[in-house]
Length: 194
Image 1 (cartoon, rainbow, N blue to C red):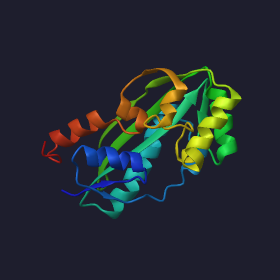
Image 2: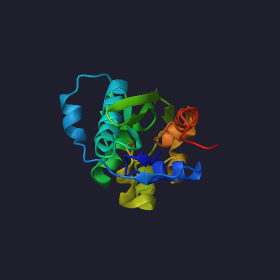
Image 3: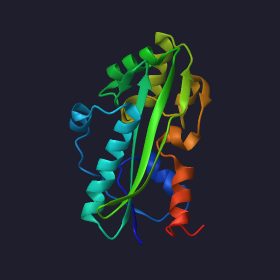
């Protein structure tokens, strides 16, 4: 059965490719801001709502395929963070997160046609070291605007790892996809050869 990733995330695509999966990518046209504005769900439920919306849209268009959807929300001191719109907002995010521990609520879901087959939610916790304004300025100079594609204004798989003093949780989940549980589900349902 054909496998589709309903995400434009290069990091998620790389993880699946590196795991040996053959899949297509179709980026859903989901209004995440509208879903967030209309939802009264807690953060974990909201991350799952967003992942479900993405997978469901593509599964409806491609009912012959198994569709993977994912979403991630950063939560720090009851404040939810979206991807920064620009480098100035990225700097504000990093200033707020500096010296604090935050959670990355990460949801993955699998749909086939009109049916949701499976989902998983995980929340790794990351402790950012105390950053000076110069630290933030130097980091953003290194990363440039590509950092605006990351919910926390950092990418742990690159120079962003230098921002942290402690991390607890699965590395793949931190990158945006609870890969091991997903592979386990796909293997159990005959969608993965290994």
